[in-house]
Length: 296
Length: 296
Image (cartoon, chains in turn purple, cyan):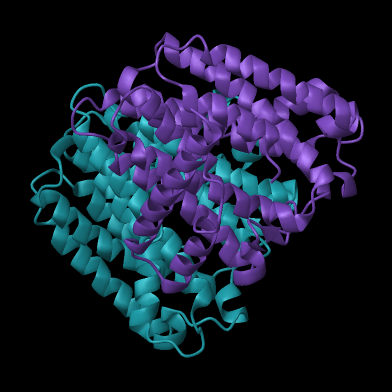
């Protein structure tokens, strides 16, 4: 797969996901203002990296994606709720997200809390409704894995570590553990949701999880680099906030150059894992490069 | 069933639920401070009315409660998360709940937001783990119903209506609709969770839902009466807040005496529904009286 083919797939998948997300929002019955605030956040121009991973994992295994589309949507709902709650004044107090004013700026803090709750709860509903009539168990395993990854020993646990850590006196290993939970857990869940419903938790999935481990670290390290080097305008969210908050990151500890080198190492290790897989995972080699070299 | 037998059942069920909730908290793996804050809220001395309804519905149908215990726990987790988020400064800004300082007072606003998220997410995990190997579908239906009831066209939707309504110029029917969503939906879900996993969505369940409808209204009207007539000390939460906030309630519109009469009407209508059921629902006659006459 060359870079143009990769970009074409990203474009097509993004359009598909945006269409499916819009359909799911349109079908909701609830107070109009809540629908509006949910749509505002979920339809903001995001990278859709998690649902794309679900879809492309299924395709790499030669499977029909219909079975896992509900999981792909549920993951994006979960990601979106987590952004709204993270941005709240009592949390990171961010004003900009995905190029738009954050939910609490537009709808007020009370509505932002409830909109986050709504997106998480709707993710559950979509996930449960998607349980297939035939052979439901592998899908249910993936669904269970997804909510563990989103939960207290996954994404939320990482968030708690993040706000409770002593950011001034931190070891690299502690930071990496926090980031593994905050970012890595849901990326790994995306790989699980695209594979396990078809093949169960087999050895191939274990290798995918190793791959997920490395791209999680890669994603976070490039995030830290971009936070230091790019403007808020380009990122579509508040940049430089780690430095302003005196927060230790991989970049603040290693320095920019060494952090970039470390990203290259993770990139190689990620690709090593891909080479062990039997399906056609060419998309994921390109994805690894894409994450390594991304500029927003 | 006489009143003493009823009290004995409430006592035993409450102990069982508290034990199971404590076990579930003890088994969690996550940052210690998060476990502490989750335990603080979920183990606060609540009435456990929702999980008791799950258990007693199953028993009234002559069924083994083991199958529905996960749903009973999930409901209490959902109820507990909703209390934490409702109490936040940006929402009702309450300081007292179940006789304790509210979560954000003790743990800070950021942790209270994440603790609420954690309890909701853990409810999902418990619900999914509880899917029985044999005949999973009726359980899955109940699980789906539960999260619909907790969601945007249920509990959260009611909460949004509540914060967005014009409380000064409101019709009784609007208030009742809001309360049906905020309180009634989860009570009805408790009846569904105690029955549907055994018997599916049959006619008996439709009658139970009608019963749930009336005790939801009954529960809310007695809540409004208590908010007006009891002290914060007895209620274990801030009382008189409706009146202070100039909020229209059934009591403020009808007056105290007419509200009490209305409660009696709902109580009779609830019992009428029970009389249509074939199982031994004697517990629920007592429960109806208990809600009607409660003083906290």
